[in-house]
Image (cartoon, rainbow, N blue to C red; front, side):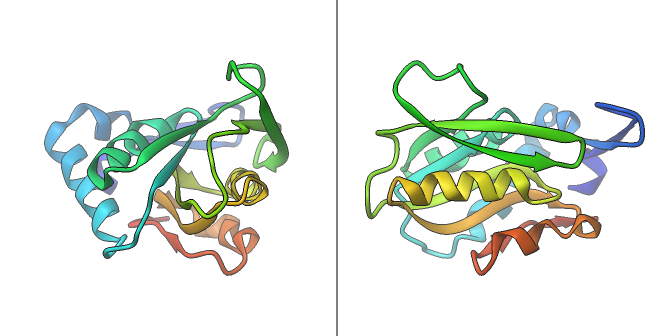
Amino acid sequence: MKKYIRDIQDFPKEGISFKDITPLLIDPIARKKCLDVLVAALKDQAINKVVGVESRGFFFGTLIAQELNAGFVPVRKPNKLPFDTISASYDLEYGTDTLEIHTDAIQPGDRVLIHDDVLATGGTAKAVCELVERLGGTIVQCNFIMELTFLNGRDKLGDRPVFAPVVY
């Protein structure tokens, strides 16, 4: 999969090397292989909700939800969701941000897979975990296409299971 992820230097700001998954999305064979790897990592786990993180977590998040016959829950930036929401703020490698989830998206006892494209500093993933847990969901796994291990993001997720087939 690494050959379908390109580096964009100085994006979104100087000093950042952005990992672009657009080539992976464009190629149907590579996209299907990536999906198969992400789903296989779940090993018969009972999952009834897949939470996708705006915006690149939506691409594979919806595909994973379809494969698992699970509901898909979008987590978005402020003022993008039309119903009642709760929010969490977090730090990322180039600033701070806030995410929101609908208050009725996760029910107590839901078994949840969280999906995003990259695990970097872990701030985004930690915020999403906190939102899911505040609503009563149980996190089965945090799922990523890639992990930037030099940023130690996994440390912020505590003992929550993490899977990322591509490691930098």
